[in-house]
Image (cartoon, rainbow, N blue to C red; front, side):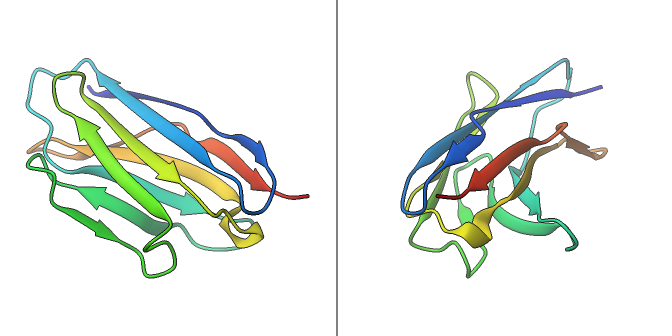
Length: 115
């Protein structure tokens, strides 16, 4: 069982920045892909960014050029640096981590972009 603990969410003004972190623990198996999804009120959960064990990244078009995903394999941690935040980025952000058996999810962290 993989446990994922997210941190770094909060309230920020438009144009501001936040850095999310997600630390994984408890797995006897190597973590493969890790990443972030988000879910805004009344909308479906959508992929934000993903990163492979070898740090190959992919992003949703809506965040390209503003968000940067990275990971520290020694710490089993994935990060999401979010810059130039917009009101439409407001959502609950969920991290995930894949083992060879399943995708594991964090509990979510709220990001609110508002003046």
